[in-house]
Amino acid sequence: MPARTDIPTPLCIAIIGSGLGGLSAAIALRRQNHNVTIFERYDFGGEVGASLSCASNGSKFLQEWDVPIAAAKPVKLKSLIMHEWESGEVQSRYDLGDYKEKFGADYNNFHRIDIHNVLKETALGSKGRGTPCVLKTWHRAVEINEDAGTITFENGATFSADVIIAADGIRSVSRGLLGITPSITPSTSCCYRCIIPASRLQELGLEKFVSSDAIEFWGGYGINKIVMSPCSGNEVVSTYCFYPASFNDLQQDGWNISTTGPDLVKTFPTLDPDVHKMFLHADDIKMWRLYVHEPYPYWFKGKVALLGDAAHPMLPDQSQGACQAMEDAGALGIIFSEQYNDLSIRQRLNLYEMTRKKRASRVQAASAKARTDLSERIGWSSKTDRSGKLTIEEICGYDMHAHVAELVTDLRSA
Ligand SMILES: Cc1cc2nc3c(=O)[nH]c(=O)nc-3n(C[C@H](O)[C@H](O)[C@H](O)COP(=O)(O)OP(=O)(O)OC[C@H]3O[C@@H](n4cnc5c(N)ncnc54)[C@H](O)[C@@H]3O)c2cc1C
Image (cartoon, rainbow, N blue to C red; front, side, top):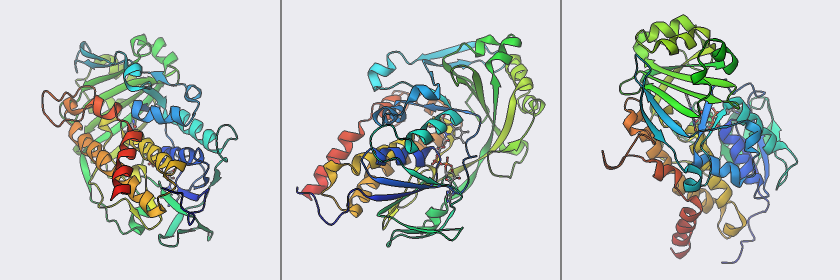
């Protein structure tokens, strides 16, 4: 099909939000030679001290976009380990084996701040394909005209674009501006997160938590679950601790509600004493209220499409929220590449929704199931114990390029 002449190339693309999703989209679209401007309501204080495991379905896109992954000091995960809750004894292990050969990329465990910094530098820096993206901080989007493609900001500025990607997170304002009313229910679970330097663990005689290249679990069958993993080149150990919301009736939202080591110990009184010891010496202990979100009826309207947590907020129990945001960005990069220049912007945004909504909604549902049942989590899940379970093959073995090509063939022949 001949290239259309009514679509400007390169496109002027605006991205609302500079979290992991917005920055990934900026890089993917810059690599296709589009002009990208990112608008952030703050000045980048956003990311927090905690680990982020990035399975091959996210890491593959980081490779494809030439993101210097090593600069984010990942720990390459090799296994998942289950401990007995009280004694800490290892009960079972799932070895990832020849993961990279099988799925095309490592299972990287990042410190969230490290990967955020590397994505930001890649989006804005002069290295690599495409025009460096522009970042405008202190630009909070308050109004969107989806047909005209204009955004109005709280500071009075306005911006017009050919395409707008709304990556403004779990509490997205853009979603509401597009007419979507989210269904949000407080989860029965809350989560603590804490980090501790490897050097402190060594002083405490807990080097077994430092030398690991695994995600380590305690519990997970029921609400209580501890998930520990090393990040930042094994210099930091990060732990997520899930507990019943009724325990302290946390109502506040956000990532920055502080608590203390003794409070963590009190929350899990019968837990492995070595984990208790770690809790009592951990830094930066914060609480998180968790919510259950239902899928939205649509992901795009006019010239505006949702991405990342704005499109598919999910519970953290599949460790897939950011990976799915990277898949969204990957889809935009593929769909807005030259090979699909014959499609209109509307057709392309429709194709984006067709590529992404069903798959991300499935991961969203599987994350809710895995909240209280570890056997639903990829790695521990197996199709043989219940058909229809999400599996590591489905997530990590996915070929998006082929999927998009198939959808485009159908679209062109329709
Ligand atoms: C406990 C926990 C553990 C997790 N672990 C993992 C994991 O191991 N692996 C994984 O893949 N995922 C994980 N996730 C999920 C992952 O953190 C999120 O899915 C991901 O960070 C979402 O990125 P985002 O860019 O969509 O949203 P955000 O990171 O929330 O970014 C949104 C950005 O938009 C900005 N913004 C908001 N409103 C406006 C506005 N009106 N105008 C301009 N800017 C605005 C915000 O300031 C922010 O910078 C975890 C989540 C939780 C809660």
